[in-house]
Image 1 (cartoon, rainbow, N blue to C red):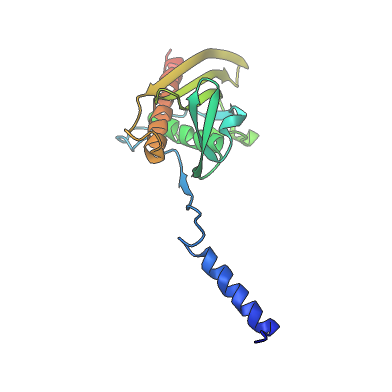
Image 2 (tube, rainbow, N blue to C red):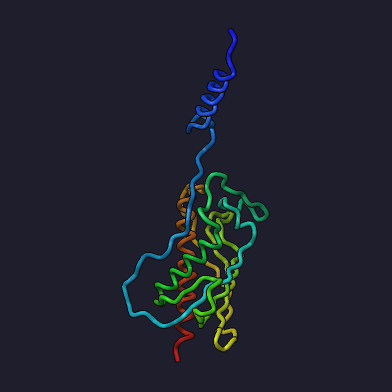
Length: 203
């Protein structure tokens, strides 16, 4: 029996469609995560404090879409199907800025690069050196940060801070729990920065 080219084309297309259906190709669907901001707090009067967040520096190994986990002191593993929904440094900056706006509180929090006309008073510089689940299962955030007075053009403080959380779940590959724990660490860092900025403002 001879098969026409048209019939053969239909058969090939049908086969491709079947392969692309969930469960037929054998490919797992990817899951995407984001850091979450602090929950809303009690409303209070806004301050005129103007803050610029950034630039933020991240190690290259954390800027891949896949979530990184440290399997031992010298080895990283990446979750092939569990990924950040946006670049981690951008997500971090956005959540940090939102947290500071709520904690201080002020509406004048801007993410680098900002327009010169915004006249930022204090600039927060951040260098993240660790932000992942370590080999012992703990979630760790290590960050070096400083605050600059843009008006006086001087350094006001420099710190290195480390925050950690125990393993979020019995399953070390529960990436939803890992992302939630990482969000909590960004919240802790935000609180430390907010307190430092409030202390700077005191006469």
